Image (cartoon, rainbow, N blue to C red; front, side, top):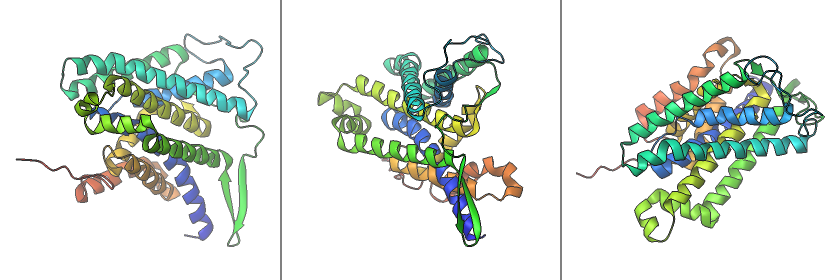
Length: 324
């Protein structure tokens, strides 16, 4: 492989891998606190993209109950400016976080209060996910909706530079996605590692009973965890939507499955592992030859299978010690 192609593949892999990472962190946060997988996370990912699209465009023209309804008669105030689009993205992520809080109240808290088996909570979250995606389809249809080409402002669609006598072309949106994802990872790392909220979250994840005895409101921090999880999922949905379009109500399903692969690959409950797993899978997909691009979706699960064979706890996970 030529150096120019190698650099281009690396940039492509880092862009999509960083999105996988912030999306998978939503899974990791909930798992580290409750020890269960939130299968509604993929639906929240989808909602985040639709929320931002609604704020930026304001109408759905093709199908669904909202067909032809224009929310902004004078044009959306969030369109045509990178700063207002950034605000729309932030609002969409916050709304996705609030939806995740509602999901916790409806699907997880009742099960937790009754001391139900974690498997029942998992099934409950799966049911909520199906309700959400079907509701989206009822409202806006199953068509693909693309963000405006000037969503990030008047930036060139791609950047090019010479390397080894060859031209390397990188889509501007990929650089923006990588920069935003990296910033979010750094902010989350600071919040978890350096703030009182982060320390309380880690205490609840380590031992909820002891944390409660120390005066930490476990229920409150579970809500904070779900909000952060939904926020990250909604943000990831918008970033993917700007690059590839909002590909229907079920487009979060594929990313939901990849997110599971990422957290298992990196190590269940490990935040650094989720970041590493996302980048590894993103880079692996980027280096799939063009002739075999149809099989790119299988790369994540092939890596997952290989890791489970040689290191069941994941790349950065800790082996579980069973006491007998």
